[in-house]
Length: 223
Image (tube, rainbow, N blue to C red; front, side, top):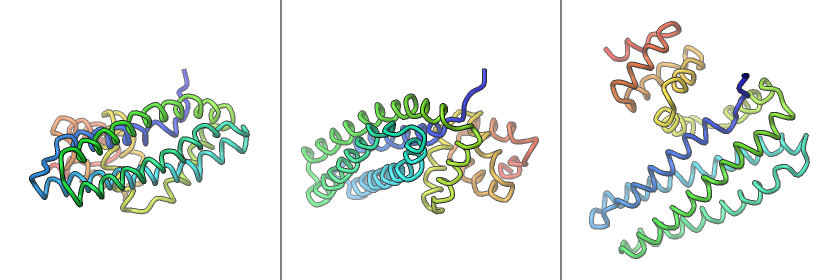
């Protein structure tokens, strides 16, 4: 059976890991260690920046594509996106309060608030991967969906791209990871392979090297 082009799956897999990793870090944060507090809140800042950018990409590229051929089909998710922006603003305010006064009650309040945000986003992403994908698949070919994704990627700057690659490389299965790296232009592979080698354990790195052997030479990086 032909598997349709899933514009949501890769970025959502990365985002789920980004969210859960940040949530766990926030729960373990040591308020008596200034560096640990600063690092934990910096991770939260990065997540909120990434989530905001992800919303913009979907609003600017995917929703207009859905609406162009199925008017009103993105309305529910668009409304939830507005709620997510409000939640992100509230999380930023709570984080600022914790920076100013690091006390346990404020830390736990921020942790619970982020947990609720993550939980809602998990349900939200499932709606996108089911209802929105059905609308996209009914209206667009795989080539057209790949072109939409290409426009999204072209709008992303190097710093943001590096962040998403970090989470994708960690979140993906070995086959997905090999497909990601193997699909890059040859000149773009070396920095991504270097990033992968730094992030992956020996077993996953070896699997990536074996998968890419016919098209690349990542083993040279392992020397």
